[in-house]
Length: 437
Image (tube, rainbow, N blue to C red; front, side):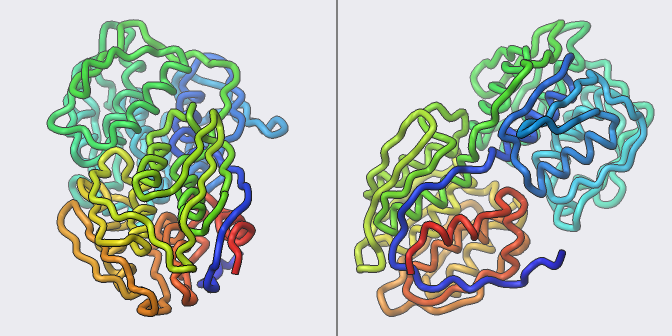
């Protein structure tokens, strides 16, 4: 099926209504891998159907994991060890798939090759490989040192149970090591130490929460040392319901904040285990009214189409880097310059998001400044908006956050809108059902 090359969004005057979130990508891919490594059969409910989860599903099937659809659930038959000991695995551009799967394969041993799209081969994995080599894993770079594609050699059979990993590039490296650690715990404790500052800490809390649901309790000593006790192993929880994606919730919460609202989001709320639910605090700081329930959020705010403005911010976004992109788009409607700090991890995502946001915000008429780990956005004065074709860089979050630019009073064209398939294939249909022209 041919992907549409563009979609034009007409100027919007308001937004209100109710929507239900798709399942969380971060939780879905973690839950799939843990179910595959667990003893017993797990029924997963609310699993996200997207490009990234399809990558993980295909990889697990290739590795011999038996899965069957059962109504709205997916039943995964855990194998503890992957039955297939030699395979070529194509991982697309799914960081939440390639990194933990690399670690799980490396500590089990076998002959595996992992590759992806060209952008995946530009996304660093060297810190994870270094840590796995400390454990005794046999991993070879097949092209550029520090980046996929990789080969895990037949002699990969780690015996060590202590590793160190840098924390300042991607929290997914620590997640990968933590999820693989119970596979090494038969003979004793497995210890993982973090060097330097650990970024995106809430994503580690998701990992620890999921591991606990599957029977493994990790002893966390601050953010620098994690111990998986001897004898730990994954056991199926039987049934696990995946909550809605809090990162995706940020776009609809933002619609309520700039489109008047009320806009009600179902599927994630006060009981969420995802850090991006903290985007609600950003909206409150900007002047929106946010009501949080156990599994729902309702947002009402200003109406920027009538000239009303949100309050400007100067904020550290280390803990919510994905939702921070939504904040950058909202900065266009603030009453002064907005500064996003500590977002260096943007540079190793699906694209270099600092450079990409800088370029595309400027197309709309905004004054933008940026540095190694920060971005400053000056709001666009009324009447100064420029209609633009937004390049999305095959990055789902670029497409979704720039849909918010339709409130500037001029048409906005989103190029390659189908890139939202990575996490939210129906995004633009849901968006259109909530926005008034």
